[in-house]
Image (tube, rainbow, N blue to C red):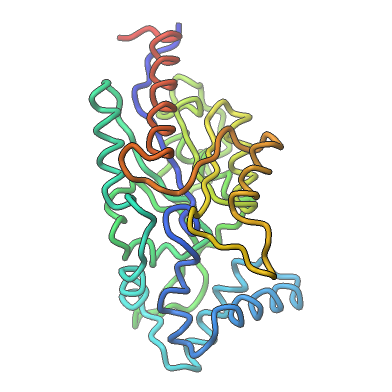
Length: 285
């Protein structure tokens, strides 16, 4: 029998999963004197024009427009923008609650972020201290502390590598010596069967699909307060249902993290399953 692994990892996308909208939209983009749709449309135009990764495109545009608007691009400014992010209902108390739930059953939960958004914004947010690692797009800085170049771009396909980093216990984004190295399952700190991934849309599909193929659990979440418009009739709930129907995620639920909400109860049942499987198929030491 396998050795008991009593550590569980829950990985989250950020924008749309833990917080409504994109993190740059709260204060940063308005400080560029740009409308939010104009910023993203311009980023998409640049990506198309230069055959450019969309994440690198928006990061370039952040720096370019900030310089023109005389908006600070120092790390402390980005952290301050992150502090303004607001979250879905229940998020700020959820992390400790779910850790406590698992701990009462003899298991430890670790929380991780895997996001195409800015890691500096996440690091400045009210929930940053809950995460073991924050894997997100980030900048490098010059001697004056100003952002000068993308240090890391996390797009929808390379999100999957960070699930392997969690699986193998790699706590950085730069070390690739271990990521492709064959490691015995018994030596991996967190097996995929002990992992849960939460995402909100199509950019999370590769990570969710890979999680399922590796024996983990994928949950699609949606904004429960979204109101359809003439230009956007398909709701986030419709999208999540499509993802589940096409077997790209196991479950779906509204992004309400309050105690005893649908999502809260679903996550607890997933933890119960992981624990039951571990106890059934493992030999406790």
